[in-house]
Image 1 (cartoon, rainbow, N blue to C red):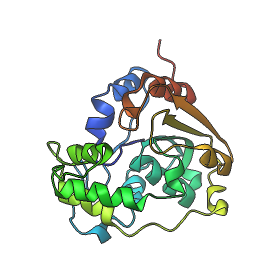
Image 2 (cartoon, rainbow, N blue to C red):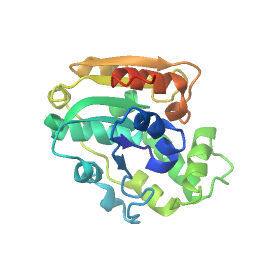
Image 3 (tube, one colour):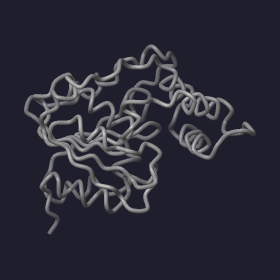
Length: 225
């Protein structure tokens, strides 16, 4: 299962990068998920509609345990899903998450919402906020829906006991220039997790990083001949 990040989709994140083609070459079945508010999924404009993004994940899952790869919002969603129903996951790759799992940056979220709603034109916006605004306004995206995701009520903090439920092997992949760093605490609270640091990679470049692709395929026991 492949789950994209905020402002992306299964097609733009995983198909266009060629990642799905690599999996198809070795006969690995791919389950693509478009989270609510993205891609082909419905795009409600009410923040309350995005209270539980795991519903799209669970509705696409087969009965048997799966390997799952998620980036950013997709990684956060898969982590919540694995806490809720750990028996349904065989291995997890969580990319582009780290300290933000524990300490959300409310001020950064406010700036991103402002950037989206201004179309990236507000004079005092920082560069990351402008990048988020650019993603929100890409063809096929609904900026109002994407802003609504940012405005949803914060999820309850994940406790150590909940992290302990995720007993499957987990690979955490984070770029060395990603604003979600550090990821040490996430590695510490998951029972069977290891970290791979992606060289010269910022947050947005993570899914197309060769280091990320190589580490993920190796972790999933996918061998490209």
